[in-house]
Length: 59
Image 1 (cartoon, rainbow, N blue to C red):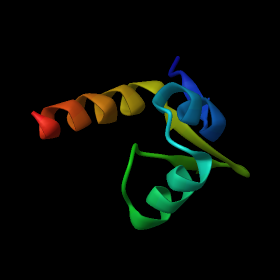
Image 2 (image 1 turned 180 degrees about the vertical axis):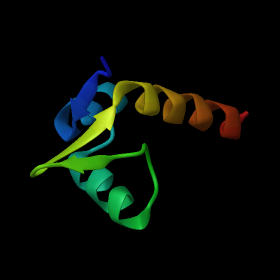
Image 3 (image 1 turned 60 degrees about the horizontal axis):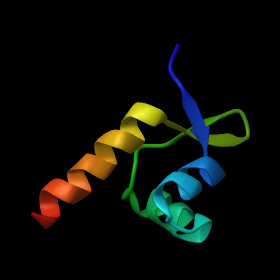
Image 4 (image 1 turned 90 degrees about the horizontal axis):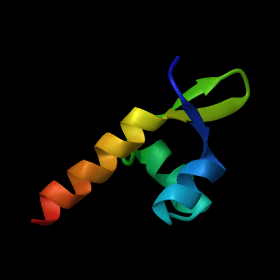
């Protein structure tokens, strides 16, 4: 089963503030997110991929 993370969990893992994650989501930036019911969730694998991309782009 796919591990789903809530916004606060992504914020804790990445150090990115919740407001920044919300802004990025509206801009189509940051890790991929989806709305399931009323909750915004992220797949853990997508967050890890996004982190890896940040390192690759800064190298």
